[in-house]
Image 1 (cartoon, helix red, strand yellow):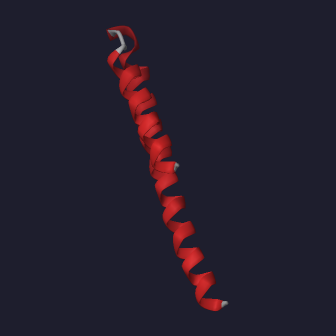
Image 2 (cartoon, rainbow, N blue to C red):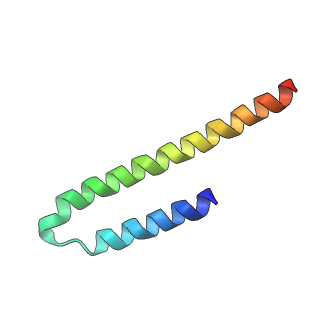
Length: 60
């Protein structure tokens, strides 16, 4: 499910980026940077969750 949402977010970001005018290019670049930071945080949380789940299974 997470992979699907990430793909949809990237497609939406790409669509938004291609529709920017020269006047809004700066804001668009900031938005793309925010999107990448959010996607990076989601990936980090997924990895941390997987590691924690592995540790908890080892304990029980």
